[in-house]
Length: 116
Image (tube, rainbow, N blue to C red; front, side):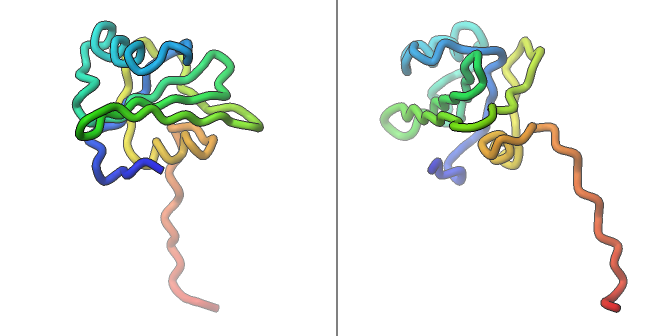
């Protein structure tokens, strides 16, 4: 699994991406289209059209990592109608990998006063 303690930021690349393009293709999308630096230590997440496959590009020390996840049942809750790269936090990242939406409603604070 990815060591999140070494990650600067996490970004979602909007829309669907052809997941056959490889490391150089993903780095090019990040750099040319979205004007970000793929060498900055951030995670960049890409999803396919069917929302059942996910790839993550990450530069660490001396080279790129390309992580791949295929969902066997259900789909990835990929954000829709986004036109620009979107930064998410670590909690949203975990939610996305677990099949949840990144816009989860907050839990209500427990207001218990004692045990009956």
